[in-house]
Image (cartoon, rainbow, N blue to C red; front, top):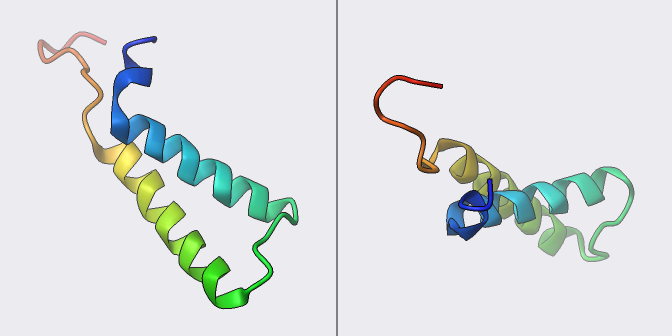
Length: 62
């Protein structure tokens, strides 16, 4: 598990998810345009964090 924290895409995905989660609890950026841009960037970071390979074994084992 600690090896995942050394991967930049994983960390960026977690940060993007944190931004989106905080927005759902009402912690938004006051400027609507900047908030919308930050939400879009956060969503893209979450997708990148999900899609990028995090060092999973290639031999078919789980």
